[in-house]
Amino acid sequence: MGSQKPDVQGSPSAKAVNTKPYGKVILTLKNCLLPEEKLSPTPSQLDGLDRETETDLRILGCELIQTAGILLRLPQVAMATGQVLFQRFYYSKSFVRHGMETTAMGCVCLASKIEEAPKRIRDVINVFHHIKQMRTGTYMVSGGKPAEQPGHPIRWVGSVHWFGGHPCLPVSTRLSPAVTYYKQQP
Image (cartoon, rainbow, N blue to C red):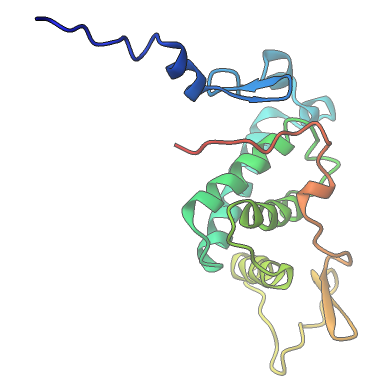
């Protein structure tokens, strides 16, 4: 006798597996995209930055996060999370008002915590400083102290050094509270 198999795709239990309700917000992969009004014009374009420069900064930021993640030996999922956070941040904030390198550092810090592979902030700062040295061709002098150059990115304060004169704050302190950290990597 022919037994009919239940339709797994259309059953209510299959729909419950694919959606995750959080309070009044239902998060699925179908509603995670940005609305059109957020995509164009972006906050950076409203501040006078042209589209090509913004695209280049977005690509460079993701490359920095990927390179830093490799040097920090982070899992690939943490690097992908950092890049997603970086892109989301700049759809609500402007490149003109928020530095790309500092934001990329914060995204690496936050992504490593989200993906349960935390790294010390000092390690993240040192890796980003190393990447900057390799790209610009400037290196440390012997003795472990940075070369005395105008505009040098690291400043020594006692036994602690700060990047650009301020601590590397995670992006979570700069993101608005409305940002949802739910994500699902492919």
